[in-house]
Image (cartoon, rainbow, N blue to C red; front, side, top):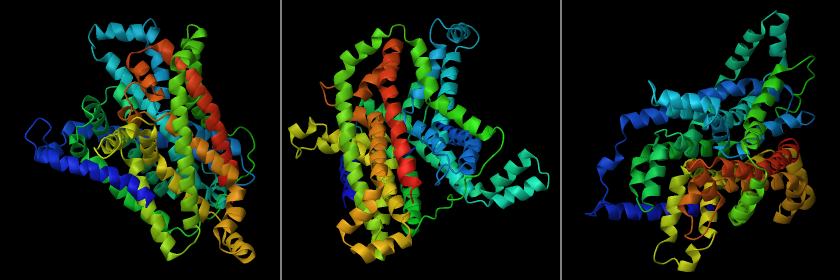
Length: 522
């Protein structure tokens, strides 16, 4: 019920405002014409989502092979590889784009060349360069999602299949083509997941001036936070979010157990494994390379202290919100975990119900989630003091990321073997306390890792945060967005080194706990 309320209540508020605006006679009136989507805008939205998805799958193929071959998610496998894949997903989406963009800053070789082109025969050269960097940055940010999905499928492929091809003298290219054929369904699923995330992506595309439906919503809400026309003009993205939420909810509610297909996947490989080398290069490109570029761009290390003094309050405030969001989502994970562990028809319905609403929040553009909560908390019946607290921002962040918490709870429950479950009920009964002692206590590290991961996502969330920013207060999202907009390279470099550098350490710890205490200990 809590999960449904976090979606239904703000949605009802938006619908009421849409109805009022439909009958209005002023500039804020809405009508059927607001449902129209410009063909060029639709084409740009689809092209960018599909293009980044294809690039992410291509980049992810060799890392996926490395993960499966080394049993990264299995007992006895190489956990370091799994951590390397998960860390980029916990860092800001704009990190790689902006760091690479430092190469085209004024007084750099590329920057001066682009400036000469813009004053000559190619005036759009800087814009095109920004879009190329945005595409590359998003592909480097999204490839881990595709890699994890494909690796899970590849781990279920029998090693004898590849061994027979090797004995027959098949080339390395042919063996990879055969593996792709065997897991082509998972490749499509991984591409689809990237497309879904890209449909709601805002910050990198906004900075690169790429026209998409999500960017149009971003601009409209920033011009007028009370404008509900964006909900009509974004109907296609919302429809996709709802439909795919139904699909995912039906799938996860029908899963009775998650088999450990990767338990015996790790195997020794002689010589240099180039798939691991590619994985390492991609992981470093998405994490360490941006920090190195920021360190090179930093003119004075004293700027780090200046950032802490000037923006310290914003970092602390956003950090406290992130901790609160992580705690709330951890509690939600425990509730879903317990309900899903019952393995009854009632629990399946509850799990499917929660998964649907949670995934809707996950797939809805963050700008719309933030605006929905901003409109809800500004209703006359809501006290003024409540609006000035961090709670509205926390509610928006919980709505954004509760899909991950629900899926984690389902995974923890479904990955418990029937033997362990039967032994628990036999020895300690089916009470909540017995479940805590036998199931939760053994995965305390994984739960802590999940909390740290969710805190990282909340800390770096910009889309929903800027809409709910209280007047007179500063947040990390607002601070970094201002530096991104006004090309404050020194301030942005210092902020990235302090915030993203520390966030990288937390993300590594979170990924390690999730892999070694959650996925591998099943």
